[in-house]
Image 1: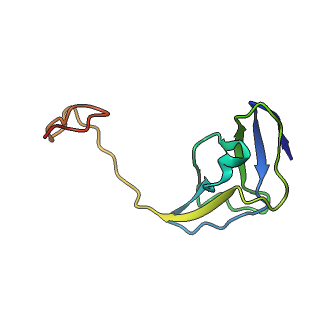
Image 2: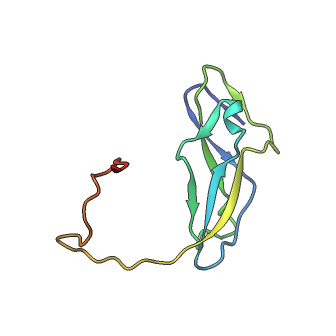
Length: 111
C-alpha cells in the first residue's frame, strides 16, 4: 500500500491473534521503521484479549512524516507484537493522597 505524505495509512498486518486471558497484545513499530519515513500514529497499540475473531485482523496506523509517498510492500517488517501479562487494578477515589508530594509531574526531585 502507499501512504501519501503527511497522512496516516492503516497498514494491514495479515494476522489475527488469540491473546490469552489476563494478557494484552502490545503492538509496536520495529526500531528501523522510522527509516522508511513512517512511525505509528498512536505510539503503541494495545489489543484486548477479546479482539480475536476471524475478521479481527490487526492493522497499524502509520504516519508518513516525509514529503514523499511511501510504499509499504507485503512482508516489510514494520511492527512487532508482545503478549504482556497484567493484573487488573481496583481503583478507589480519595480526597487526599497519603504520600508526600515529590514536586509535581515532570519533577526529577532534588538531592
